[in-house]
Image (tube, rainbow, N blue to C red):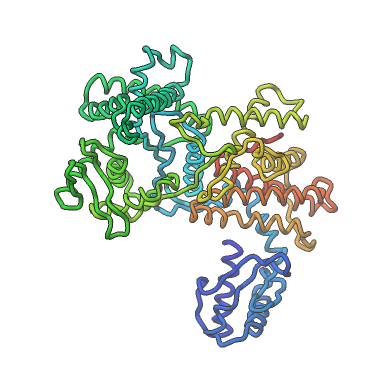
Length: 592
């Protein structure tokens, strides 16, 4: 039981005994005491005053005295300040927390809840490589999945490959027009980069054709519709949905090139999936559901034969669900996918990790599913802000996107440069250095991206992300290595019985309080679907630990009791840092 729960129970019982009034833990707040006041935890009294007909001072004094007398092993002192009861927890309680958990590498993780959550992330298009935006998506989806697992949920990680549609046809048309039979193998190019180059080339050619048509007197809007390369892509999409053999064969070959490239990147960043879905499969079920919706009057056809849903009564507008030529749009396959997921997993929640530019799309999806009588209650859009570079926003069709592979390479290069500047790795082998640079570089990338609340937009700067003294993964990794260095000299004696007659020094106590909070931090991060809660906690823990080992000797402590106490603190800190960083996909080296 956490210290907060223990305080809640004690307060509820005390109020019943003193005032003969039944309360629950939901009837009042308990916060950490503000640094400027004496105490560890604060009971906010205001919600209790009216039902008990007490003044703040009288209630605080009566409750505080009762708690001290009734729970001497939990509370050592109290003070009351303007409606806030500040409680100091005994050193013995904190010592017991340390003794009970310092060996436990699974500390903080919750028991199984018997509930299933499906998390969909990555969701790449097969016309281009993964880029910086995909990295934020993958890091968020993967870490949210791991955090939910740690909080006791059964989690299914899924990915939908957007492997069909007009964008994919654009790459295919460009390859037919410009490649002269080239392949990733013949050019020595990673498959996803190879196909992505043709998508960019399509955009370049499209601009040229539009410019030519407008120069001949056509309006820009008409030119964009009549450009020969765009008409070829649109015809290819029709041919694909009709199952034309040569189109299907080219589509399969180019997608396989891309999947081979994706697999390499996923392995590098540590992304994995329990189930892969393909839009080319789910769109068929979506089209069937659109047809059923038409028959039921949920959807309607316009004069040009396109199919729409009217959501004006729900405060939105009309939304297309099928084009006039009968081809599917994104929402079509998402309707089919929602059914596929629920039939497979009977989930309690289905999380879609998708950027905030799709907020409207997911409102529409949920409403359509409701109208069709499909499972919609558990649909949750984990919306996140765009990630940009210092130079500004990226655009794939203009070739200004920074590929994920290039960013990873850059991070490892920066990690090597900054580590070598410190000059502390001269005894590392070449293989050990390679692993270390990879661990530092990828850790810095993930930490820098995940430290920001998902809902906020962010700017990623590789140079700022590696700093052994700043708010970075490198600092947290170094703190873990520092704890491990102490423990390599001496491990805590498991047979030693800690004595609590020596008062905890401020930094000793502060560290144990932080460590005790870890289970609640996991619960908060899971509830909020927010890995930044874990990242910020790990940084705070690392910062406090560094202050602790700078101020206090561990192996040459004043007494044997203090040495064993501090060794236990080092062991538990190393365990919790490793555990917390693992939840966000970051490795922590044994030495740096």
